[in-house]
Amino acid sequence: DIEKIKEYVGSRYYEGLPDWVLNHRNEIISGEDLNLISNDLTVQLQEDLNFMKKMKSYKGVRHETGHKVRGQRTKANGRHGLAIGVIKKKE
Image 1 (spheres, helix red, strand yellow):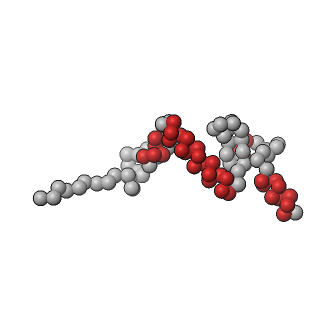
Image 2 (spheres, rainbow, N blue to C red):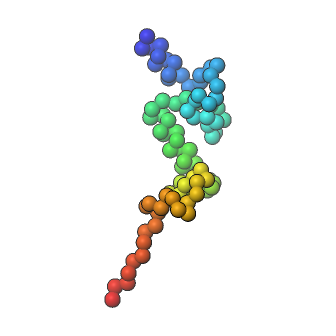
Image 3 (tube, rainbow, N blue to C red):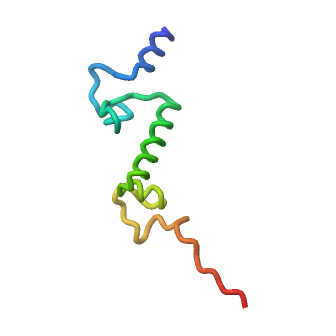
């Protein structure tokens, strides 16, 4: 039983399932829909972020600067941790 579960979960392509079930859709290089497990998923997401940052896309720039990425408003919310503040001159 455990071997069947490992084989099913470990398979990269789930046949017969809709795309929205998979956790890594439209992979950047191959364009395939994948279902990745544990460490593979975190590594792939980090590679995607680095790719966006290198490409200087809008999302990559927003990730680099630590701002909101998905179109949220930033005037009133999400102010924590972005500004350094004012430094006084030493006299």
